[in-house]
Length: 381
View 1 (cartoon, helix red, strand yellow):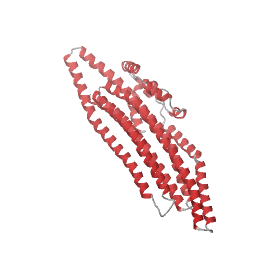
View 2 (cartoon, rainbow, N blue to C red):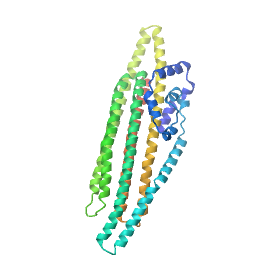
View 3 (cartoon, rainbow, N blue to C red):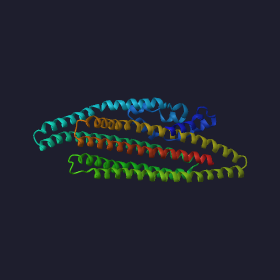
View 4 (cartoon, rainbow, N blue to C red):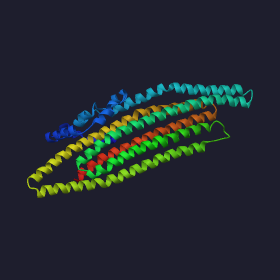
C-alpha cells in the first residue's frame, strides 16, 4: 500500500497538466492498445470489480489523479467485513469439526468399558470424518490459490507489454528490451512452479501429517515436515532468484539508457541549429507524457494485484481461523491425536496462504522495478 501511495504522489500533478503535455498523453493513449487489460477488467467478477478504485483503464490513464478513487481506510474496512463474513460462512465447518470431536470423545468413553480395540474403532470413525473434512478444506483452499495465481498471471501478461512499450517511449530502450522477455518468462515460470510443485507438495505434506496422527506407533511427522520444508525451499529459492535478477538488471540498464538519451539530445541540440533545440524540447514533452502513463499503469497494476490477492486470501485466512478455533475448543475434550491433526491442517493452510502471498509479492516487485527503471532513466537523462 505504501508503494501505491508513493506512486500516486508522482501522479498528483496530472490534475493540472500543461496543454502540450495533456495533448501528448491523449495522443499516446490513442495509439496504446489496452484491449487485453479491458478484457481482463470485463472478465472480473462483480465483487472484485466493485472494489476497484477506477471504472475503466482509459479513464485512469487520461486522468491519473482524478480517475483513481483510492480510499485505503474504506478498502481496509471492506476487507475486514469480507473476512468476518467468510468466517461466519465457514462456521458450519467449525460446528462439524467440534461435533466430530465430541462424538470421538463419547465413542471412546462408551467403548472404553468394552475393549481397547473398540475404543480405537470409535476414535478411527471420528478421525476419518475429520480427515475427510480437513483434506476437503485444503483442496478448496488450493483451488482458491490456483485460481488467484491464474488471475494474477493473466493480469501481468496483459500489463507487461504496455509497461514495456511505455518504458521504450521514455527512452529506456535497452531496459524495455531486457525486462519484457525476462518478466514474461519469470511470471510463467513462477506460476507453473507453484502450481505444479509447491501446491502438490503442500497437499501431500498435509495428507501425510494428518495420517501420521492415526497410529502413535507409526509417526510420519518428520516426513510431513520434510515435504513442507521442500515446498517452502522451492518457493524461497524462486523468490531469491527473481528478486536478485530484477534488482541487478534494474540497477544497470537505466543508467545506460539515460546516458544514451542525454547524449542524443546534446548532439541534436548542438549540431542541428534551431531545429535541433525544437526537437529536443519535443522529445521532453513526449517522454514526460509517457512517464505519466507508465506511472499510472504502475499504480493500476499495484492496486489490482492488491485486490486480487486480498479477497482470496481472506477466504483462506477464514479457514485458518476456523481450524485454530476448532483446535482450541476440542483440546479439553478430545484425543490428543485429533487435536494435533487439526493443528497440522491449520499449519498447512497457513503455508499455502503464505505461498500465494509470496508470488503476489514477486509480481509487486516486478512492477515496481519496471516503473522505477523508467523513472531512473528519466532522472539520468
